[in-house]
Length: 489
Image (cartoon, rainbow, N blue to C red):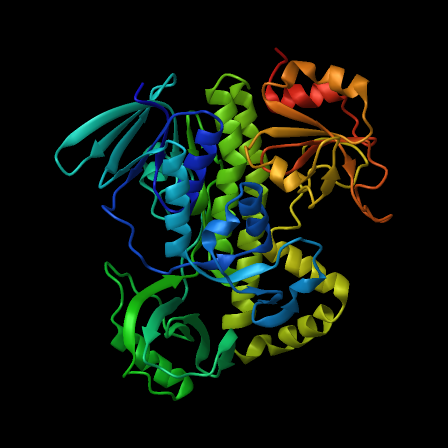
């Protein structure tokens, strides 16, 4: 075997997955066809849940100063994300080029073998191993691995080579995206609609402005290269009446509203993550964030299987948990596209939804959907409100120091919180301490209405989701530990 895991693609999902695998002790090769990072801004910012994920790995300081906001939208209708209970606001100004640079440095520091200029050309799953053929630029190489993960984008070669079903709908429209300099336009952060289409304007800093344009009634074109800025400027003038031809383009791209999702996230020894598994209209900036969260969900599980701690059946929970998340992603982005990009015929729907968003419960529901904070995995049956949900920020006071659950998750290990100093609990978990950190501490300043109030113990997975709680879980602790971390040793 050349590696336990080969990851195809060094975008945000592939790099995050490689780092998670290395934290679990698995050796990994990342194959990337491009010889260097593009430096293109592409996806901007992080949702509140991705901020939590990065905080759980101690990565946030690497991004430097960023702009935060609790103002968002759903299909162009303003939504106050401040109604959410997360410890973080969304980050609005981090370009994908910076995200990729940070994740690449992190993955390589941890020991990931990143091979740029290596294009995967063929895949064969032999049942006990996977063989991949790679164009190295200097010839063909053949590599073998125990598991292959396709993080190679919406046109995924891995997905096509292995025969994953990818049903959905084709693009019906085309949107242009351009980063430009030398232009002075008023910000339109959540967009503005015109009779002929929709535009968005957002400052990126350093004199660069992000423009997004969708001209209504213009069918999508099949392109083999990015559009020229002149095409964007012409469409912008038709829609808004504004002349932007004098702007200096930094980067220009186009995308559509094709909506597709694979029917299975795992087939044999091959798995998919990110855009390889789901494509959609990039409404609300959810695509990159969902892709990173796919990787974090899969990383610790695949790492546990590779290093021998858990059975391969654990990987089935990756599909069980992330496929429904992808379905909701496609649902809400299609809904947002209809609201934002349709004509006057949907104005009554916009008016009704605007009225409903005025109710805090509705705003919280939509904000939670777009931010990723609403996710609840089917980890266990029971009455505890945190089961299957992300672990909220929690300050802890132990015998020797103060800490937080966020800090405890930095090594990407399971965490069993003993909140009542129970020797019996610690004894029952003794067979898993090579994979799970048992922490005896008291919660600090927990409000009476907190979901942690009255809780004696919590089992938190490496991805920050609660797998077991006492009281409230129907399963006992050894059963939960075995399910998520393998048999005791």
